[in-house]
Each structure stands twice: as C-alpha cells, then as structure tokens.
Image (cartoon, rainbow, N blue to C red; front, side):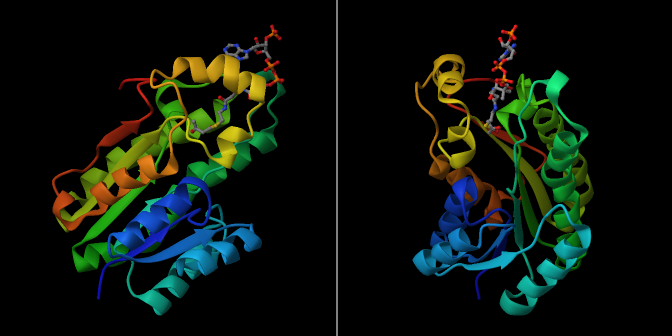
Length: 241
Ligand code: CAA
C-alpha cells in the first residue's frame, strides 16, 4: 500500500491543490478541514479524497482527528500543515481576538498536528512534515502583525523540529508561498491588491496553487531524505531569502 498523507486545510485553496497533487503522485490522502462542509463534500465528490473535520487550533480535536484518519487509512507518513487564516488589520486597530485566532491556527496548529503524528513517525523511522509558511513570515507585511508573527514562528518551528527528527528519518521543511490566486488573497481589497501588491511581483501575476503543490510533492518524496530544515520560496521573485 502507498504512503498516507494528511493535508490540513486540504479541501480548498492551496491545500486542495496539494491534496490532489499528492494523490496523483500515488499517496493515499486525507484532507482535513475546519468549517466549510459544502466545499469538503464537493471536493470529495470531485476527487475521491476523504475529508475529515476538525480545527487545528484545538489540541484534543487534532489527536482525535489523527486517530480517526489512521484508523481509516493507516499511519500518517506525510503531514502537510497547510491550514491558515487571516485577520488583517493595521496594528492600531488589531484586536486581541484577531491576534489570538491567527496565532492559534497558523502557529499553534503546527504544534497540535505535528505532536499527534510525531511519535508514530519516530517509531516507524520515517516521516515527512511540510509546513506552509508565507512570504509574509519572511519579510513582514503591514496589516498582518499577527499573520507575519505566526508564519515567522512556523519557520523557527520547522528548523528546530528538523534537528530533532533527523536521526529518526523524519524531515521537516517549509514552503513560503507568495501571493497565490486563492480566496484568501482575492479577499484583499481590489484596489490594495492591484496598486500595492501586484506591482511588487516581478513575474507580474499571482501564483497558482499547483505551483505550491509541486514543491510539497518534491519534499514529501522518499528520496528527499537529505533535505530537512529548509525553506523553499515560491513567490514569483517578490522576495529573496
Ligand atoms: N506599508 C505602510 N503603510 C501602509 C501600507 C504598507 N504596506 N499599507 C497601508 N498603509 C497605510 C496606508 O497608507 C494608510 O495610511 P494613512 O491612514 O496615513 O493614509 C493606513 O496604513 C491605513 O491603510 P488602509 O486605508 O488600507 O487601512 P484599512 O484599515 O482600510 O485596511 C488592511 C488595512 C486591511 C490591512 C489593508 O491595508 C490590506 O488589506 N492590506 C493588505 C494586507 C496583505 O497584504 N494581506 C495579505 C493577505 S493574503 C495572505 O496573507 C497570503 C499570504 O501568505 C501572502
């Protein structure tokens, strides 16, 4: 049987493209999602990929959810921590709630999910964890003190965990997408997107979700074992790090 991959936020946006690409590469895929039942249903109908509902911000729900996935499909070999939210506001208007929601999902979510698969990966001496960070975790972004902090935290988490997993055959890597044409980016005010963001992207367009998914497939492969603790930037030349 092929390897099992679990993708958080895996039924929409970049996550949906990742789930599909991993399936096409031969993985048995489980797509987690938090809220949108209709999108998840449609996604399963379209792709045949099973969806599982829980919030990555909830530690106990992650433990239960991972148990359910493993009972159904087998031990998780590949975890893609993709689920993320935005609550953009200039800092002087940002509420503690907006800060907390983003940190809980985009940073603590990685702890919650990785903790749930870590011991199994250690025992089996194989694992792949791919964390979807962001260009805005690398460079910072006005209006996103919460998101930039969480996504920068994801990179520190990646590098620390890579060192712990190395001897157990577990790699931990990050991908930093730039501005990709998903609902999240299209939710930005059109004027802001057109006048302040697009002109900064040298390739002159938003990225496609599939352009992130191909990097995930690369890092998830069995023969990618020497690549760990690394960050792949996929941002159309907007920022180099
Ligand atoms: N740098 C410095 N100052 C900026 C700025 C910037 N990049 N952008 C806006 N400002 C200033 C404005 O000039 C304005 O100043 P004045 O009041 O002196 O005129 C002030 O900040 C307020 O700007 P807005 O009128 O835009 O404020 P708003 O409250 O209406 O909106 C906002 C604030 C919601 C944060 C809006 O600016 C916005 O959506 N910005 C884009 C943020 C962004 O890039 N989000 C990425 C989402 S996609 C994503 O996160 C995926 C990923 O990983 C890439």
